[in-house]
Amino acid sequence: MADEDYYATLGVSRDASQDEINKAYRTLAKKWHPDVNKSPEATSMFEKITKAYEVLKDPKKRAAYDRFGAGAVDDGAGSAGFNPGNFSGFGQGFSGDDFGDIFSQFFGGGGRASRRQTGPAQGEDVLMAMRISFMDAVKGRTVDMPHEYETACPDCSGKGAVNPSDISTCSTCQGSGSVTTTQNTMFGRFQTRTTCPDCNGRGTRIVRPCSRCHGSGTVRIKETLHIVVPAGIDKGQRLRVPGKGGRGINGGPNGDLYIEMVIQPSDTYERDGLNLYSHAEVPLITAVLGGSIEVDTVWGRQTLDIKAGTQPGSTARMKGQGIHTREGRQGDQFVTLNIKIPTRLNQEEKELYAKLGQIAESRGEAKGVFSKIFNKKK
Image 1: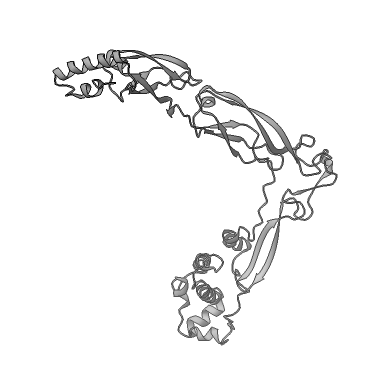
Image 2: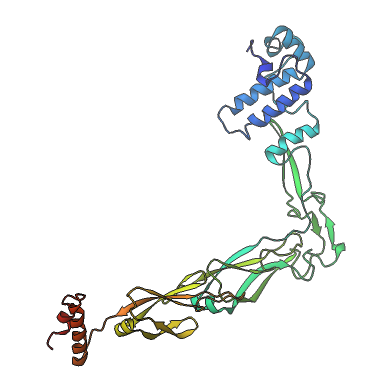
């Protein structure tokens, strides 16, 4: 377009310096490059700013544009001879470092070749689940768990060769572990970096491989781990087994194995932290007059004192009968008391309850209930 304002396209003034023009172009190129910006107008905007930059970066083209306008450079007039369809020069006007600065942000490559980290690195941690019973979680136990994992070969210490002289620098990547390829496209020249196919990223090649691992540097181990489950462990808690996780990189140490506890529920107890909750039946006469009952706990049957006049659904606390931890902390057991109403009575018992009913009725408490229940004939 004859009236196109290239300065406005780049967002600079007409007296902008070359450094200001270069900086503005770099900023816009990063924003609108089609391989980064997926909006529909990215390609047209990228072409537009590149067209403006191709004119303003060249002193002769810029002078012709300033004097005669865009037409002087678009149609080949003067000395510009600019072809708006030619993008092979994208990146021209920058040093090799500038070119790398832009495209390393796009693709992780560019003019600056960075070396791949080939030193030893610790492997990843591994998470597994272990299912145990409720009582195993309460009292603890040792679990024998079969486990299979990869680790550095003990014969070659993970190097893949027994002798250092059997290891040489990879001639393909020169020890960097990666190779760079350059491709010319309509948007310019692009460099991509990939893992070296000859050494698989190690940066070295094995001349004579280790006889045990055959040059891989790793071996697969099958063993039985003795996992000590501590008393009082709760669901979701994890145990750490050092060095039994994912294999290290380039001879580095293995990661750790984490075992997360999955605890089967109990038919008798409910757990909340260190406290346990259960139910127990109390005979009616014991609830009325007081006494004691035997209650199941995780530590065996214990005697629980019942106060006279205990009401249905009340809760009794048994101190120290909950979860015990290896740090010495102890929880309690809370027992919900259900009053057991007798369903089969002999004649003597009926007469006694009937008498109690009469006493209650005389006080205005029972209102005929006892007499209806216990004064029935056989």
